[in-house]
Length: 139
Image (tube, rainbow, N blue to C red; front, side, top):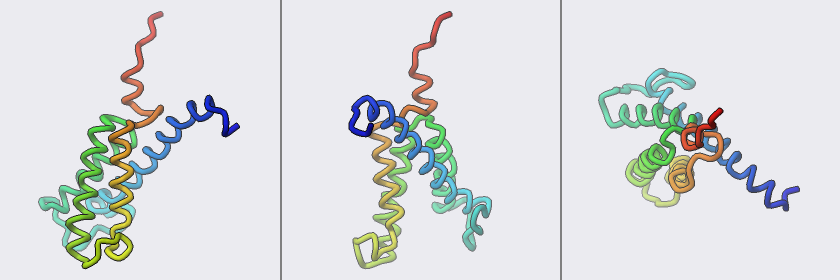
């Protein structure tokens, strides 16, 4: 079954969509916790009018758009960049090591790579982008 190319051709775009949806929802939680204190308490001294607030807004809007598959490539590019900045500038400033395990930047590195992948390959079969590209059937 798994050796069948037709099986892979059908399920690879679907699996890509599942991964996109899950990562979008996981990513959105970071912004929700900053602004709404859900599912974890808001950070102490959080201010919406700061770079940290801007990051939270990008996480909420970007995570939602990514999960829905709307403007997937553009959104993925922007949030991949945000995670690269978080890894290279924030985590590296807090640590003397480039290695993600030592600097605590594993999550930022993984998010950045996955989001950049969505920028390159798109959102998969189950996305609003894909629905908009399909030709309309005439009755």
